[in-house]
Length: 308
Length: 162
Image (cartoon, rainbow over all chains, first blue to last red; front, side, top):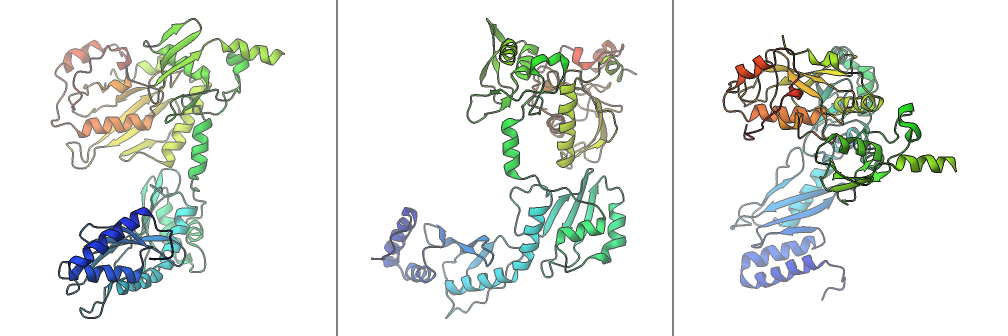
């Protein structure tokens, strides 16, 4: 038995299946022993017939990569085909007599090492600029679309062989004279500066910063889903409600939208499907359509607490 | 012309409406819907938006203009959205620019935004299989001669396929 008892149940199921299959055929036996050489720890997925698996690999900077390997039935006569989230694949060196899966892993690891600088540049862009569709940035794509403010988008194409060099750059949208500046100032590009610094230096303007995902979530919890503000405006018409925070939250846990009860009341009153019973309005949340109920005269309550 | 009579009757935006529109505009600029371009003006109450027909549809390479007018109490009420002439030929778009689309009228909710309206309109255009006017176009347009807003029309939303 193996002494390290921290294997997940999925792995041990996969392992048990492989052991079973290994007994039945030389192909399985070979593949099984080659996976054993790499170790079970990085194995993420395993095809039922042992011809497909994926490994989880960390590069020098701790970025996680998935390497997918597909085997032919006549493996190792034909080399495995490999794929991963990289801008280009390495040319696999394969000897039908001596190469094994661990060699594929080594070659992939080397390939990752070569791409470190490229990904550092991409990470820098994703971290410090406002990238379109930034939620799942691709490590394979050398292209980044960056908001340059004023309806203009900058499309940069990072050279993966020389990531710190001047990138190809196009502009779409309302571009003012950014493309002229780009052409005129592109010799100012310096390998010493970071990518975002270079962009800002050439364009002579500060580019928008990314909105942190955390911030956005926090915002959503406090901003009113109707007026989009956290605080009501100060306005004589609103009386004691002037400047108050959101005070109503949809009870549907997966919706959880916040509102000013004033905004929600105004909305519910403006549609015909709302029902009123005593001082409570019954209607539906404008976001998730679940039932909501708001008291309409808690205006007075606010007044009282203010006076006491 | 019938298209721009109504908004002059609009009262100025309330503070709440102004704040919300300011935020929608900022969000639009940060993350503009594909196929749309807003014409920058200093009038927050009327947005003119350019629509590019989606590639691979009947309206590919066509450009149209939407005029969006916001009521005093937006978003409690829907904005008035019409096409400026020439309006696209579409079974749900009248020659005076009025658009038969439920979310602009009965199905409006403050959870929607200008950006989501634009997307609905583009998807309505994109799913059309022939460029033609609604069958009751002439009758309807004649009824609107005095500059009536489409929001005063009692709409029947009979066909959600196009």
